[in-house]
Length: 585
Ligand code: ARG
Image 1: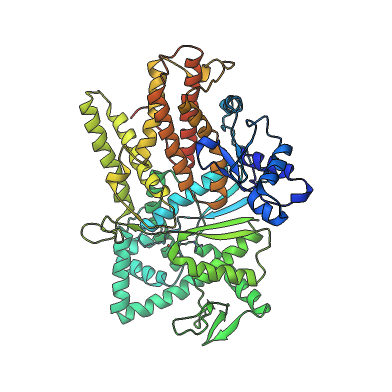
Image 2 (image 1 turned 45 degrees about the vertical axis):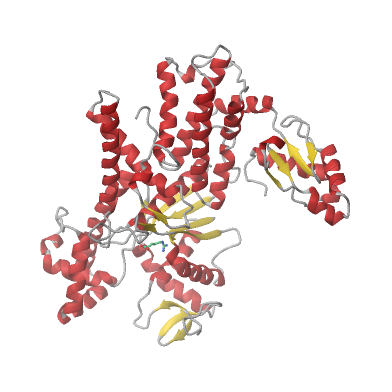
């Protein structure tokens, strides 16, 4: 597929397409990385299927393509292998020249897209007064990384926190607040109603046990919905309290997000029903207003509708999401809507997206998708819990990551007999701890479940944040040791790739733009993690084989440039995952 930005692969693909001529028009060059580096860097596999189509010999077709192929500025003369594979090997001079170009570019050669889109990323989205759990942590980390990648490519990203801040549960919360903490309602903003999760449980218990409480809670819902001052005030107090808790997590994780909760869409819900009714999609079913869709049945095999308005007149989660879709398309002018939520909600989003499409609210130019992710499991393979079986509090989970990173660091400092300040220790522990938690999450294919293990995520070896941070630190160490300022290296000095490990590293560095383009398209940040992991490995291989500071000029400067490019690629790549680098660790 031709990429939206001019990557090396897309240039080669284009050259092949140009070489097809009219006879083969529209064919896919089937360009893939070479199966074996012996054969070069890429191979085009198109001659075989085309031979069938044209009833000719694959080799003859490959020869014809090659004779028209104009890639001399990038590749060695193409070779045809076996039955008709076209092998392409990148020219060393081309690689050297590309490295020179990206070296002088802050963006390391990653172009801004030609057609920036307005993108809504709906992520994190915890629920007021309920636990912000590890599922929300995944949504936060994955959504933030997707947003960062799209922003870096020049898209206009609206980061939305679709918090659950509306619904009938607020009846009991408001009523309990009035009883248990009346001073919270007198207008002073300073009252602390304590742990909201505990508060929620107390309210729920009273709702289940006390008839009078239940009745008052019902009334409170009506009050809140009709805009009653006092009920609104109580609702605000509850939301503010939750917000403060959420913000602590966002601060720790360095997350930028705009709150636009479910309540925001409340006034827009009647218009959703009206429009669906006008289009005759809405039908009455057991007193409720519903939409029937193809392919959704209950356990008994009967068609299962999407409930838009319940028999008591109340709206629900799906209705709010429908209103959100309309608003994002009509008012935000979103061209791409990405909702990062756990895989368990796939059915809900399937239904909602289908209703929106049926209703004609989604123009062809708009892409809308649920970006699902799997569960976080404990080392026992079950849903992550504390030792005593409770849900893990996110703040505790992150603090524990930082503390463990700190213990590791203190041990290293002692072993190496270093003298470090408390500030240094604290900031390294925080960067490593948070980076490790984020990276452990992002490096998994998001659709799979993954096992949360501090030991694994903090290991200095393997596909972990510390391993990558360490590669970066290694380069900074070279600069300190040799007293070298990478920014002032001679601009005209040549880059010369001689050792195999240099060539391998250089080729990898030059693939950054392709990886970022792929993440922007498929929204799998683990691809970027894998790229950075391989980059670190290739750098370490190079550094083990080739001397840098001890090398003779011009090799010395050339290798220093390669080190610097690696470090800058790591730094940029990690920043798109929301992970900071360290100069020393
Ligand atoms: N609040 C929901 C939850 O905790 C996630 C919301 C996702 N976004 C949406 N537009 N429905 O699971």
